[in-house]
Length: 301
Length: 108
Image 1 (cartoon, rainbow over the protein chains, first blue to last red):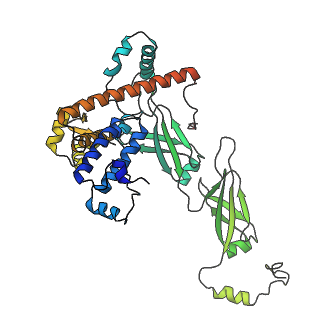
Image 2: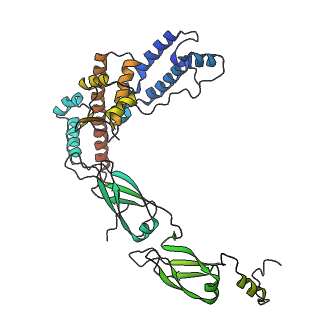
């Protein structure tokens, strides 16, 4: 860690006024906006500003001199300098001034030719792409939908969500980005999709999985019940004697695809009555299951 | 994201008259929308630079104008040079143009 006195080039006995003069001399030389493109100057400027921040505060200077604090973390954290905005490729050129090289463009040499070509290319070049993020509901991701994004400038963008879209997929809407500055095509709008999870559907590949509760009666005797699918409820036949964990497959009720569709897998879950049921209790007290029917067979040796 | 004149003044702790002078001197050229001025991040950073030049570096008003003019020329030159180098590289590499499309919307 460098000594802040050394950074400013002053002695430990320097007065506040001497310190300010030393700081100004260095800042004039090193200010990043007066040295665009010079990384070294920017780093040095941050060191110098940090050192001056520390030593220009009499209380902190005293604590530093007494060894209570060190110079770590004093490097001034600065958001961004003007040069960082002015040098962005997308920066608007309101302030920029090309008079500094107009004489080159008049001359007939390689540089002038490159500049002229650059000018033509800039006029023809495509506008910038814009990026958006869109959260959609699970069922819209499976079935497809049209969603409207409101843009910062008040305009709207209609996004056609294809059925079966996946988490993180990016839709490119041609020509919906920034208009070209010249005669080129407009840029594209890139929309990244994120999908909100569903209360009971889970997607794996093109198949959907769901856990479906059934009553004890439906499990033992079998039944025709309604089961949810992304396209709406369908009638499902529960075979007699179905157990928790039994899996039924609804073919083609998964995620639609151009070539066929995935399946929906239904895992049954047998539910006892929510309220205590005296009739069931009295029935079971008088019922003796077969001796061989031990679900824990093989677990206890 | 652009901000209004009121927000700009508050953010920079600047008074109305000072801003008026900066605009008259063309140190700042905010975006004019209907009746109001609007300021971008570029304008905010430029205003901070002007303030630092005056307050921290002791530059007087004519000096600020000279520095900003030279800076604007320098940024123009830097961009022109970067563009020239890029087109020069693109020509020597004979690069194919637009990058690959990531995903196409399925409009069928």
